[in-house]
Image 1: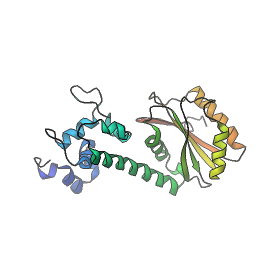
Image 2 (image 1 turned 90 degrees about the vertical axis):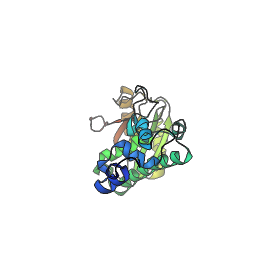
Image 3 (image 1 turned 60 degrees about the vertical axis):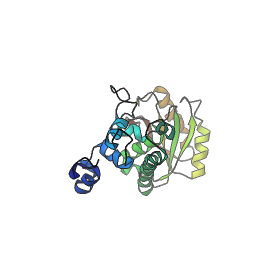
Image 4 (image 1 turned 45 degrees about the vertical axis):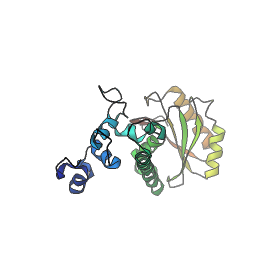
Length: 231
């Protein structure tokens, strides 16, 4: 980056014009800091963000969202990402998760419904298998805890209402947001999703716990079943 004029260097550009003035690749280059032999840090960052099937490019992460959902093993396969760079990228992801969790802990989750979807995306969207989770909320609808309760194909028989009720009682919560991912990439609620939501609403109502929403996520997409009138 030393070959660039000062005003075009990501660090100087950010300090002079703010982070919004930088492209995704420039922001990522600041995290990576250095490139590898024969490849500048900006080139490396750009390749990491390219679509996996870009002509002549190595497998990438389909944009910044895909990179944020990458696992430690995913990053380990990328040439030039040593332990220090991998640790820094994973730290950025964890900071994003914690920042969103803090927002949800400090105020009602529906004061910022998009934050709920973004938080669930960061937690679940990149999983290769379906994961069912529950956000347990207090009487002011602030986040108490997110717990992953079940894995595998999502059906009424693989998600046990009794276990969800027991965890709700354990947290002494007043309400919950249900959440799961669709590894297929489509976030359209299935008939099984709708049936499961009805079953859990009925079971939790017996212990005075409200189901506020059921959020479905995939990389780069999310949907609120409450917004669709399905909760």
